[in-house]
Length: 212
Image (cartoon, rainbow, N blue to C red; front, side, top):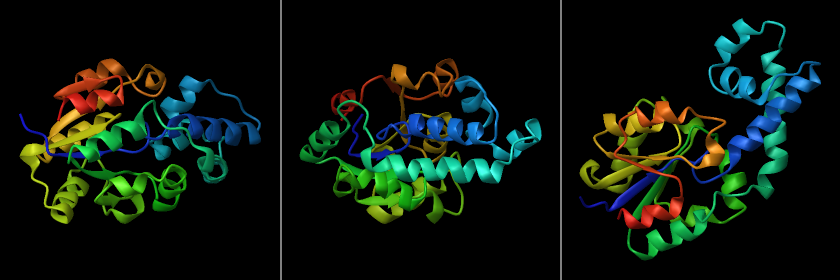
């Protein structure tokens, strides 16, 4: 199998933003006088906000999201990357691998974190969440990336930390890779990720260099 191109997810794959979002939600919930465990926050507040609002009608979700967003804006300039993230990108670029990025995060949050490390230079295409009509697991952002870059699905790999990344990549006809470092276990069910049918699973980003 030949892999000439890699499309990266951002949150939970290159940038350690999941931990910042958790802290932001925790602070926002505390601001409203409530306390929930980290597991409850990640399961009930992170993603499907409409369901969370139904489950916790006492929480003002608009205020919560504003507080979490404000926390992210404050913390992103000092964002930490996952181990060897920048080194991996540099090696892949040196080896001639074309790279792109698709994220559900807004462009301003993305570039606040990415810009702190100068990572944007590695990507020939970047599609942020506020620039896409639909989001993963819909494959449309990946298909648009192929049109933007000339990539072909048969030699393109998707890497992400979530099941939606894998489903979108498979729907687009690409090879898929789950990034599953131990520190992400709080945010994802690793058994569920394993059942998503990804072609590869790696706990360290540097292992990507061995796949191409």
